[in-house]
Length: 85
Image 1 (cartoon, one colour):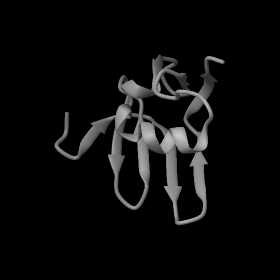
Image 2: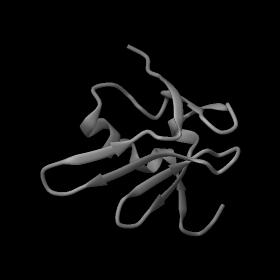
Image 3: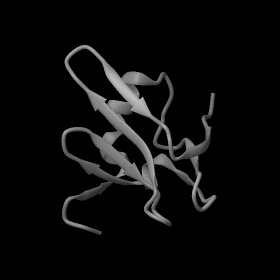
Image 4: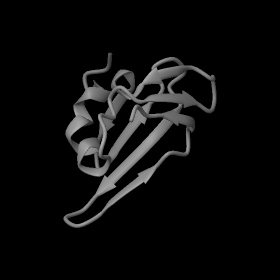
């Protein structure tokens, strides 16, 4: 693991603010390699925003940017997102 990289559990609080369910256990299917892993298993990089990458092929799955009042979430690399209700 890179020194600047965390796992998806590092953004659990941020995801909880936006979604009403536990998101680290949600299964995301990667558009590139087809692997289905829990969001908590993704590789997370923080900078001006958050980038969550597939732990299998390093594809960008989710991008998150927030300011004081809004959150932008891009799911461009996620084919499906399975959430328990």
